[in-house]
Image (cartoon, rainbow, N blue to C red):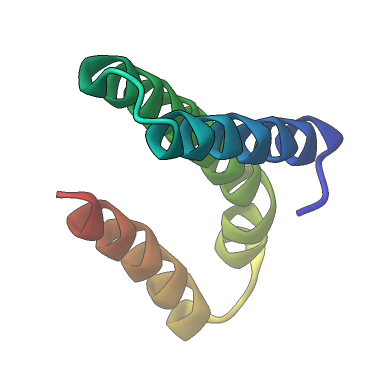
Length: 87
């Protein structure tokens, strides 16, 4: 997974999160910090969607096309488990 768009977004998020940290260190208004944190969380969700899309097109597609039923079940279970963890 080396999609340039994903890596660029992640680097942007690192910068955004560092800016949020600076806001908190400077004692900026709490609601402003929370709003910026919410923006980072939203952007992380978007990155996760992009990564999942890539995963479905590559790893999952390969498992479905492959001959190993065990591998196919493992990949399916991974996807189910990742959504259970988000709650």
